[in-house]
Length: 416
Image 1: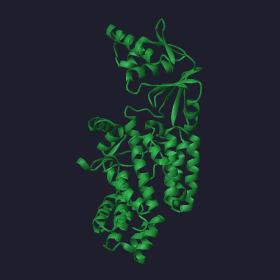
Image 2 (image 1 turned 180 degrees about the horizontal axis):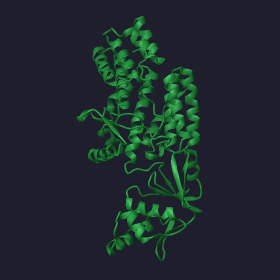
Image 3 (image 1 turned 60 degrees about the horizontal axis):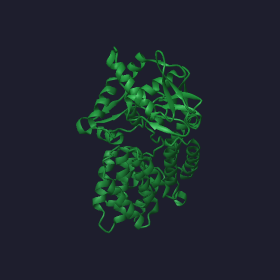
Image 4 (image 1 turned 120 degrees about the vertical axis):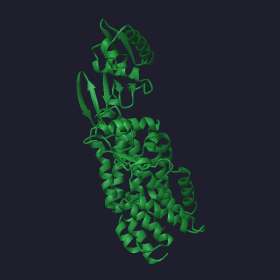
């Protein structure tokens, strides 16, 4: 390995892509192509970066398995940042195993972090947590250790464990300072803002107020019966009943929770649950059926009592009933939550992350675009969607997505 390649790799590892390009910009050999690709990714030109990395991968000989594996890992991170969730995950797994077999622990750990980030974007929180638990960050370089702690914090935020998240972010800040990479330090600072911005809205006793994530955690462990519109569950400190697949029942539960300790007229419940402007006997009959179903679902938590004009919610053990809602509510809140990460998404990636059809996503995007809430770039199959982050709010509870996800600022290939 010549001195220019070594110097360029060192520049990339310290977050200096322009310094790396100054050394290898005119070279076409495989190591130079790989380093140029990583530098272009750090500078934000992901399309050119992908082309260069594929050229480098083809240029490396069969005896240079480690170098090829590093190119695949860098390409996988570009795919992840580009929200190309259909990129073959098995290729990343094979590259990670090659790096492990050849003793490249730092890049193998980086590959494992990419696998975990993909699991988080797809909503596989348990699998991501198990995979992360198998990694020991103590002997890793500072930049890789920062990424590890950001993932720990991201999972803790999704679990609404603010103390764990705060400790992980503090460790990430120390590791980022030791790494001396400005983009990495800025990333940790941005991630820490999640704990300082409103994450949910509390509705109780006819009043509303915004809650920080720490206050949400305290509420979840209190003696309140919580109608949780962020997850569409009804819970107290000991039990939770999911109504995520029962939208009518959840609409009834939320209406009853917002009115507690009072009751809700039948006409109001019909309008909220069935979206009916005019009611007739069929609506009233259906309401009786749905209230009966709600009683069965919530029997361990509360009673739904009939009153002279409607129904009321009576908790069994809880001291009060409250509703926990998104800071800003929208018909397509889940799509907005994903787009608010600042990256550009394709409809196929959004559908994969949300577990729904592309046609459903397209209808949601069309509605959001008509309202001026999202914008698109490109045409046809190359079209990507994005929006600005929600001003003054964190999207942590919108989808329970990890806010502090590493970005392409750390794409690297030590010694490639």
